[in-house]
Structure formats: structure tokens, C-alpha cells
Image (cartoon, rainbow, N blue to C red):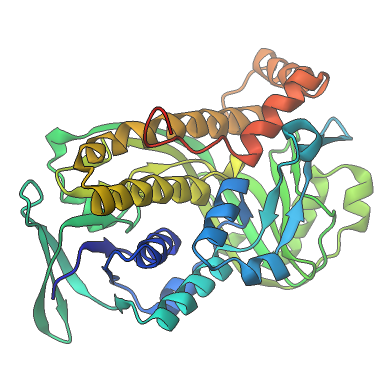
Length: 397
């Protein structure tokens, strides 16, 4: 097998890159170790930044999102029994976010890939990367008990935090930055109407809570729990009771509860690896960086990585601009670190930390009060939440 760009991972970032490259006439093959059904079964993010919404439209997969997604022009911060509305459109010159589940994004991208006839190899075992520092890298993998080889020009590692792409880079070639938080998010998916038209981020003395949604009839709620908590210890009744206790009284009163469809605990961490390139291998999304979900940046950062690599590769193949390849990492990392900062800040602002003393809690409360009490503070929140602009691949672009 031979192609121009080999993509490892058929999640949303790998599929989106593949779709954009295909539309630009750049051949690509996706290698995925799981089945298509397994990939679609992942319950993940649902808040899409303005930039990702536009990128999906550019890729030709925005029709169902535009028809069924929920455009949001604001969100709420709840603390001290009150609710503060952050008007995204008014504060950012008309920008907003789109509520559309990652599962649906993946489904749309899979359908588009199948329709255009591009190749995805699912259930590929023992994937290995070879000759990454040469001009002729290649992959090997096992499929149906046979070892196959895929020759290519470049490799895009879109296979997540635990994937083979980053593990194929010598440890001494990478610098890792990491912070692990002493708590997680217990999330519940339920077929109940949302408690609010917009997302609500709640700070409470018992811990953080988030009211989110996937559609007008399906909700996603979260409560902060200790790092040692087990999901089996949380009955639906206990979850709903805890969520209500952390919300303002008017919201708690109208919260509609119901059986959970899915329940899980996600640990929180900040993680960045530098650089994001090793020879002909490029890391994208969770393979290179993780953010706490507080700022809704994980999937969106993957999309900006995709945009950067796609625009560079388009110039490489159309104009021979191979000099741009070495800029990939620095372009991506500038935006990544800004998003890491915002996610860390939102996490620090809204969660209760186990070792937090009375002074720290009062500072946390005052900082939140400070940011919502002025238009300048609200603007900082809004422009980061809708997503900072994508970095140009050339200075004069």
C-alpha cells in the first residue's frame, strides 16, 4: 500500500484531516486499531468553538451540524447563589459556540469518508512506525493475521494520549509538561430536557458542577468528585441529589431527573509535549496535549492542529513549500499554551481543592467576582471561550 499522508487514528481529528486532505486532492489512508462502532461509542465533548464550526463547514460536513446543532451565544456562571450571564456575541463581535456532540461529528465525518471512497483500515493491530527521520517513512500493521506495509510521505499521529504515535518518538527528543489535578468529573448522560438554555458552570463549597446538553432532549451533567471515587458508588439518585445541592435554588427546583444512559468518571490533567513533530511524524490532538474539560478546549485544540497541518501540507504539495513543515510545532504550541492557560485558570477558579485554606477560598471567590463585575473581565472570559483565532502558517498570511 502507498499513499501521500498516513493518518493514525479514526477519531474526529484523524477523520477531519483526512476529509480536508481529500478535498484538496491529497491522498491519505487512515489506520485505526479499534472498530468503527467502538469509535462511535465514545461519549466525549460537545461544545464546538467558532473556528471548528467553520472548519467542519470547509470540509463539507457541516450540513447536519447546522441543521441539528444548538448555536449558543452565551453561558452562565453560578456562584454564591446567583447566576451571571456571559454574553459571548456581544463581547466578541458576534462569535458564539455550537452544541453538537463529538459522536455526531465523528458520524458525519465517517459518512463523508465512505461517500468519497477514501480508505480507512479498522481493527489494525500492532501498528509500528518506521524510518521517521528519512524521506520514506512507512507503517506496518497486522490485519486478519497478515502483516501489511503502508508507504507514505508523512504520518499524522491522531491516535490519542495512549496511542503509538507519540510512543514512537525517542523519549529524549521530547519535553513533557504535566499537571494532574486531585479530583475528577463524574458525568451522567440522560434523556431529560436541559435545566437551562445555556451551559451553567457552578462553583460551590461542595465542589464544581456543570449543566450541559447534547440536544433539546438529551443532557450531560457533571459534578466534581475526589480522585479516589468509584463510579459504581454513585447511584442515579445520589448523583441527582448532589447536583441539585450545588446549583442555585431556582435551577435545582426545575431540574428534571431521569435514568442515566451513561455514567463515568474522567480524571483531570493538563499535559503538553514539545515538540509536536519528529521528522516526518506530526502529532495532533490528545497525542500531543490534554486539557481539563472545564474550558471545553480538548476537541477544539485538535481541530486547530488539523487546520495548521492541513494548510501546511496543502502548500507543500501545491507549491513545494516544504520549508513550512518545520513551523508546524511552534505554530500549534502558541495557541495550545493559551488554551492550556485558560483551561487551568477556569479549573482553578471553579473547583474546590482538597488543600484549599480559608484565604485561598476567599481569593478564588474574589477573583470570580472581579472578572464578572466589569466588561473587560467578561470579555476575557468570552474571547477565550469562543476560541482564539487560528494561527496563520505564514507571518504575512
